[in-house]
Length: 231
Ligand code: CA
Image 1 (cartoon, rainbow, N blue to C red):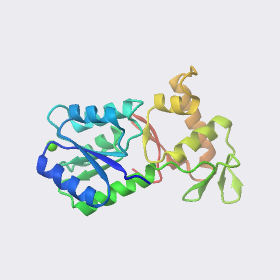
Image 2: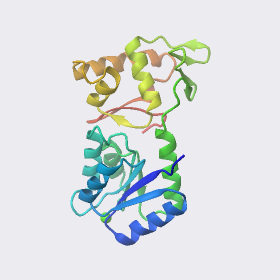
Image 3: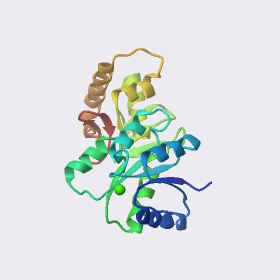
């Protein structure tokens, strides 16, 4: 397997170089950008496997860049870890709601950063086709198109199944209604965004009997996320 590529977007050269050094030593391929403009230029050449985005950048905030990346069809699947000197809880939530997959507060050790990177890469790795995926006892069996809790099948309509399948193969990330429509119904179908809310409600209702409705989380102002963590 070829080396995973990380794009670092950080204007402070010593920090950028320190991160790049640590990542190269850990076997990653590294590209560096000092602002959002050069990051976007690099993204045109090749989509990285992950991006580290500093919050405070000279031309645009890292949060704005992350939002823009997550809106763009070409880049929205690229996981983003935000780097920041801020540590307030509100900023962390803003970062995650903006589409960041994780958040590392400066100063951090290279080891900590590496652990976070590996965790995010594991999380976003697509599950092989047909595999059984399990989250705390809620199991998706793609071979039989069923969702199981122990021996019991969770009764789901075809759309709720597709929705849950999408969520369970793309966990811990926020998707807007628009993105969900695109990914679950396909881009060409005309479906109103509120349709999503109807199916989310049905899906939660079906999961509620098994105590798993908490996994389908509403992210205020953004969309929905499948997460085993409580916010
Ligand atoms: Ca900075």
